[in-house]
Amino acid sequence: MIDKVKYELEYLLKTSPKVLESMLCTPSGLSEWFADDVNIKDDIFTFIWDGSEEKARLLSKKSGTKAKFKWLEDEDEDNEYFFEMSFEVDPMTKAVVMRVVDFAEEDEVEESQMLWEQQVGELRRVLGA
Image (cartoon, rainbow, N blue to C red; front, side):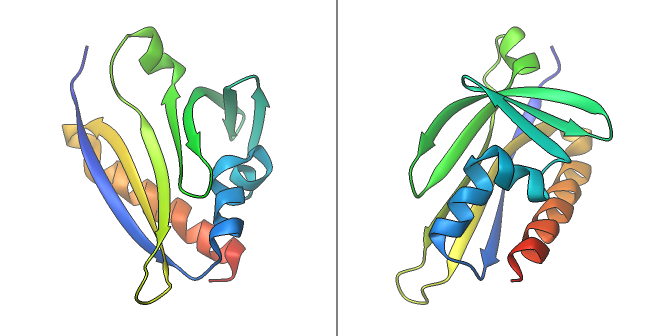
């Protein structure tokens, strides 16, 4: 098993928490920015990019704050890796802050972070933010 390192990213988004929750927690919302298409059966989300599929289990979803997923490949290997997208409203500025927690192999962290930057850029475009 290859060890992965945990990293966290933070983004300021101009949107409402209700809209962002829909974009992070529903197949239709995720398919607008995260993947080309997203399907769900029970608690398994199938993410489709350029014809290839990756499946992830929804580990937890807290209404109005976060969604936590684990790739089935990681689940099969019985490791603790996951990815989580959470958000909160800053009480002072009322801005919505989205946080991403993910894991990558040490030599792939920068590439993985750039992929998140690209995906969140697409989220911003979809939100008009």
